Image (tube, rainbow, N blue to C red; front, top):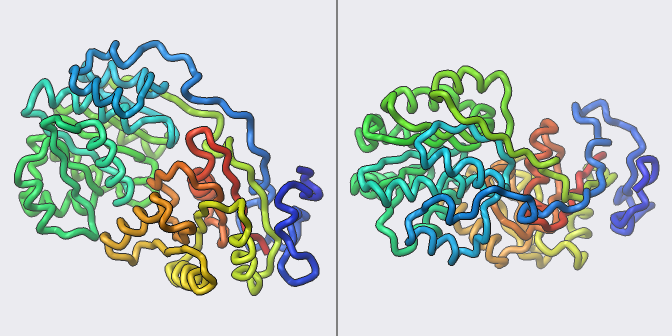
Length: 398
């Protein structure tokens, strides 16, 4: 696709001369945005199947308990990904690990498998996993549960927006693993429901996102209450100077592992849609009427916009729902389940869905409203083009 005249496959979506906008990337009117909109235009790269990348170990080489190894095989895992290959042996050997890995590289299993194995060998193990969002915490628990079928390994969630009494009752039964978000974990600590001094292992997942969300003091508060003898596992997509004090404080002589793919969006065909603000909603409806838009995630900037768009799409006969932080937790869970299981075809969401949304078959991401920064853009479009599928990302630009 030429950078001066976008005549690629998306051109047919435009209705020129009808106020619907058109696909091109001639620079005009960009002064209001901090992101150079040419960054929204990129061809998808050739696929590199992560299963084709050479690894040193097989799952058998990790000396996992036979019951756990059987569950790994039943889940269809043939061989470790790079992050699993390099991290699991060190975690099993009780080393602190600093792991840099993109979403979709298998990092949840990289810490879940050795943690489950530790519990099977010692029922007194107690672990806490801290994640930035409720959705990610729930997905981490689902991943743990997928490996612990018929095993005596128990977990509990500690997330906001859910019934507090149920969480308290479950945690007081003494699960091996608590998975939660910083605010709720601190709250349960203050209520003497979580005993931080009794934890053996602390896992911090997507630490870069937790810093962006302002959780740094909460994380310090939690970790400072845990024993100095703990094992600490620290996973992040990126590392910058803000993380250095945490690394020095939290980790003891860590093994550093970096598994970075070429780009989280390398499998995503990216383009822009020229459209006025008054024609955006109709343009979205027009695109949703195309057969190639099979499963679509639409990002809006505010809760009000998300609600308005999702209602208008439903009124136009589309299977759509809206997701934002103002929804009750049980609503958010149901909406995500419907989208994951294809009862909903279009999910309109705020940036609550730009991280921790693990749905492998999203065909298109549409930025109805432009993101605040390029990093957020990358996280948004990273929801498509997953597990070696090609994805498409369109950004509405005035």
